[in-house]
Amino acid sequence: MADVHDKATRSKNMRAIATRDTAIEKRLAGCLQSLGLDFRVQDAALPGRPDFVLDNYRCVIFTHGCFWHRHRCHLFKVPATRTDFWLEKIGKNVARDKRDCGLLREQGWRVLIVWECALRGKLKLSDPALSERLEEWVCEGGAFAQIDTQGIHAVVDIGE
Image (cartoon, rainbow, N blue to C red; front, side, top):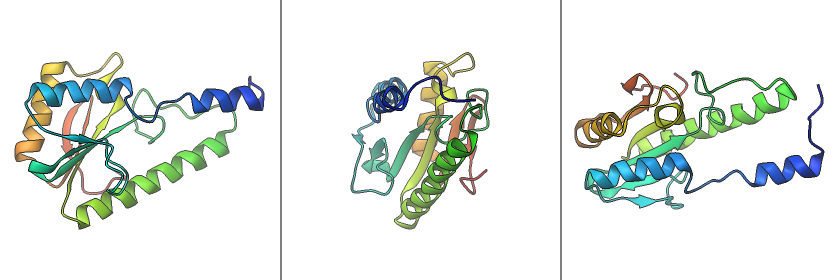
């Protein structure tokens, strides 16, 4: 099936997708602020340009869109059109994520990924539940974890 938009319209739509200050980033920033945690945003000097950097805890937090980073949840659907193109593009995102998280860990940073499904949609975590998991990981967590609709999980490899 062909794309329903012409190339110029599709390009315009893709350019409109925000890369910073998204709704999920704003929600997560609000939770971090409510916990009284100091953070910096979008540090281009670090691999992957983490969405949040908490220097006092030597940790970084990424907010990942479930579609763009291939999270196996109800928000990820393989596109019906140009399937090979999208799977290749998303696969490159996942490979880059793995590389960047590995580099951050080699530099001594702890890494947390907060998935979009935990922040929006029918199964999202409440603000108190999300804040509790953030505080738990920031203050006591391991080297690498993720938060999704099921809670917080330690991660050995980003491909999990």
